[in-house]
Each structure stands twice: as C-alpha cells, then as structure tokens.
Picture (tube, one colour):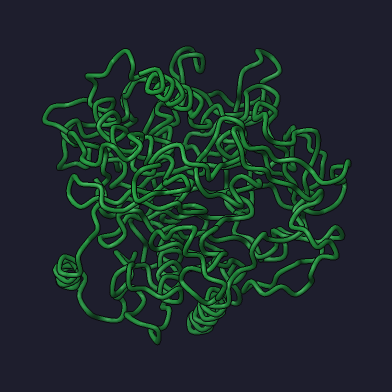
Length: 602
C-alpha cells in the first residue's frame, strides 16, 4: 500500500543511506538544498535531499538531473545496472550500453511464454536478473514456437540482441507519433517517420514481479497473472487487485484495504523512451545520442513480424522512481532539444527550454482542438482541415478505435500546451554548465547530453483545485500537466487529469469517491496510512495518468496490468497498442454502471 511517510522515517533512512554510500563528493546524490550544485556522478540518488514533500521545484529538478546523469552513464560490459567508472559520461567513442539500457525490457519481465529469461528461484541471485544478453521471447507464433522473432529478409541475424527493443508503435493504443523532418522513404523501414517506444523496469521492479513470496507466502508470481480475474479470483495477483479496487472503486464507502495489495519496493524504477531514425545532418550534428536499436516490420513472406537493427536517435526519456518519501513515485521527463520545430525545421526552443522562435500559430496544435467533458467526453477539431504531413513538424494520428478522438488525419504540434517553467529552465542551464565543465576537465570536445533538457518533474501529488498561477510555484499548471511532447503524444496525455475513458479523451467527472470529502472530480491518486485511506487527489499529467493504473490495483504500473507481451508491434501487421494496450476501462465502466443501476433498483 502507499504510505504517507513521516519525516522521522525519512531521517532514519537518510542516516542509513549516508552510512552505505559515504559522504565524499563522488558519492553524494547532487546536494541538499537550493544552493546545492549538480554534479556529474554515476551515483543514482535514492531520494530528494530533505524529502519529496518538502522539495522546491528547483530541488526536484536537480534530483531529476542527477538521475538522468547516473542512468546515462556507460555500463560495465556483461552485467546489468552497474556503471563503469573507468568510462566518461557522454564520451561518444563509447559504443556499449548505458546503465538504463541494461534494465529489463518489459518482455524480459513479462515474456509471452514460460518464465522470464534467466530466471532462477533464488532471491540471493536476484532471481536471475543479471542474465545477459537480453532475450525477447514473445508468443508461440514466433520462431517455431520459441517466441523468438526472426530477422527480416536482408537483416543479418544478430547473436546478441540490442538492449533497445522498440516493440511499441503507439502510446497505450491512443495515438502514433511521427517526425516530419525524417525522410518519408526508406528501403528497410516501412514507416520511417514513425516514432517507436519501449518500456523497461529495473532490478527492484523485476524482483518484486517474479518473487512468488512478494505478496503472500508461496503465492503466484505477478508476471504470470491471468488476463481475466473474474474466473480466477484466488490467484495472488487477482486477490491483490480485488483488495485494492474494493477501495479505489468503492465510491468512498470502503476506506480500509481488506487484504494484501500490490506495493512495489522503494527503489523501483520504470522507464519509457522514444526513438526514430535520424537524417544525415542530424547524425553529423552531435546533438543526438544514438545507439543500435531493434525494431519490427512485417515479413512479406509469411505475414509475421520480423526484426531489423539500426542506429537511431533518442528523442525522450521518461523516469518513474519510487523513493522513501515519494510512494507515488517521482516522475521526471526529458527530451532532446530539437523535437519541436516550425514548419521549415527551425527550432522553437533552445537547449534549456526557452522559446526562441515562437510559432505563428497561437494554438498548441494544427488544427486546434476543442474538448467537451461528458459521458463520454469528446475531442473535436476546430475548422475542417488537418495539417500537412509534408511539413517538418512532429505530428500524430489518433487510433480510430477511440471513438471520442478525431482520427481523420494528422494533428501537427506547434508548441507545448504549457511552457517549461522558469525553475526548470534555470536548472537545465545549471546542468548543461556542469556537463560543459566536466567535458573540459576530461578533454571531451562535446557531449550529446548538452542537447537534452528536463521538461518537468512531479515529486508529490496535488489536486487540480490547487493549481497556482505562479509559474515558479511547486503547484504551477505546467508541473500539474507534466508531459513529454514525444512520450505523452496526443491531447489526452498532454492535458491529462481525472480518469481514462473508453472513448479516448480523459474525464474529470467523478466515477468514484463522490462521497469521499465531497469530491467533485475523479480522484486518481490514493494515499494510505497503513491500510486506511487518508487522502485522494485529482492529479494531472504523468502521475495522474499512472494514478489510473494505481486505481486498477497495479501500483502505478501499466505494464503490470498488461502482463505477458505476446507480440511486438509492427506497422501494417499488428494493431497499435498490441504490446502496451489501452487499459480495459470499458469493462470497469460497465461494471460501475451495472452496480449503480442495481443500487437505484434497490
């Protein structure tokens, strides 16, 4: 269960952490206050110094940058999550994996069949987490039943698969994103402008999901959970889900958890990243981090997915980190500096996030979008025309299955719905200065990390009613709606609050907790003291969206809800959202409607 941590426990944990890591400059996590500088260090910070509830936006941003630097440190070869301190941060001559690359891909945690690759039922060995190279085992329809996708025609089979396994072509089945700057034609990539995604979990995440004793003695490990709990309520996963949804879907009438629930351990990290092929000019610019990726195409010979590997550029990195004082996770999201472009390819923002070339269009997107809340909510375009895909801007298309979203053409991005707030811009400048000093001290001419920026960070939840007009405040609008222009993609995720709906757009209308604290909006983040519910929020952005996953009982993890990954997504062969589907909110809506109908009949 999520706990509201007292400062007493935080002090105890901090003392323990200092004992473990020491107090020298190399081992600190980036400072302890407003004046603490960012350091280029491979040490992953365990928490925001002073605690997440007490952090200013500046302190939270510095923590996020310390995470970013540590996770993008070169990794030791042949292992997972171990930084190689003999290597330099940002050295382009290093061609091996970075620390976060070595986290387990979701299909290495939730394989389409059998146990996770390398699994051993031994906690002392971290349940085989360290097994390398990675193995991507999907359903029995691949590789003569082995689940191993075969190389595409013309692709030389590789012995060690790339750590970057891009098996998603949409964001949770809502929309697909495209980069107009990328050439439309390719001999090997059927949709070269398409942005592709992956999701990963670290060792703490993996261990919790594969440990049969994580929730109850000799229970069922979470990775093997069934798709439908209605027919198997006794399964450990299903019992935990039912225990949590008794409260989260209880309309405020049930406030005590009736039994064990899913509650990932402190230190758990989940990642989401976005990638695309680069133009020759982009490759030569030094502004993008590039590495070998695996992506999937349709095999023309048997109409099944096959893989290709190539060198692509990193567009964004989204980090969710559960810390001692942030049981709802700290959400930090980074982007490459050149994502948002004018129609002629001119950058809208600089490397720190300042707007340097404002678009002529006053609206965030072309066409402009009009949102109407309701049952169901709808999103419609203002005007009659979609945007021109021949322009160099990024654009997205909504998945037609989401009936409340406009899916008749391309929607181009002009600028962010909410500009990056000043404290974040200032910390970006501070981080870039620290990296520049590090480069000079170590004889590096440049680093691609100079061209990545923090977009925002959410250390704790706050309610939509508490949004401040002060853009330097911890509760400013941009922080409430924290999003990444490449990972959160469309309107639903760019301006998210309330709840997911089966129509596509979100809704603030209450479907639960109508009685709890007289809430007038959907409450998507729940905080507990022990087993007792003590506070709820209608939170926005990353935390609010993942709060819907918490409400379904999975402690903010959508990939846990989806479970086993049966196939990789490939254009023209699998539906977008196949491997990271939209949550089954329709089923929940139907159940709630039926319960309400029964109550009215009584």
